[in-house]
Length: 270
Image (cartoon, rainbow, N blue to C red; front, side):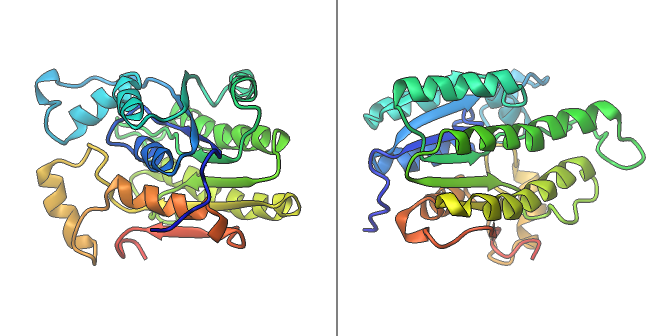
């Protein structure tokens, strides 16, 4: 078994209230390794059919993102993890500062940042013909501004260890139909490389994980049938696949890997 050297490291993960999500499963992976956790989330309210939330699909996904982190917390309690959960808005500069104040008060240090929280448009307005200023502003506020603010405060509060992981998407460079979301993630990939060069002098690594179609609760059986043939490995990516990659990139073993965008996509969108 690999010893990632993460015991008692303090890891901050955004977007962590969906029990099937990448954020939550990354938290479980860190807890397994003995890391201390700070989970941040914001409820996202979208209409959904309560009669359909027991099966994978958009209704289940929307319901999960509207909820708090209780289910995630319960599992962390079962794992005897050391953690705190904060409901906050990372697109707000003052809120970000409050997040880090709470971390320093509780743990006195921060070692790892996973910028997982993301916003997108669910109403079909993310095409060049339908795009609105609101969609542009709301998407970039979280995916870009929020990630930058979280990273800035991480660097300010650094100690003797630093790992930053940004979460993109494997289609970031060409994402017709979701142009603002794709553009925001492509921006995050560019930021990954630039910031990696700026903070290397502090011993901080900055990398980006770009998931392919990942079953975080939103892919129903019909969509799965149409998506899987596009994945050379022949199956959906699971949130655990992303979590294990993040775990490695934040470990001692990955100390010389920085400025990289790593697709975990089963060969999709290469």
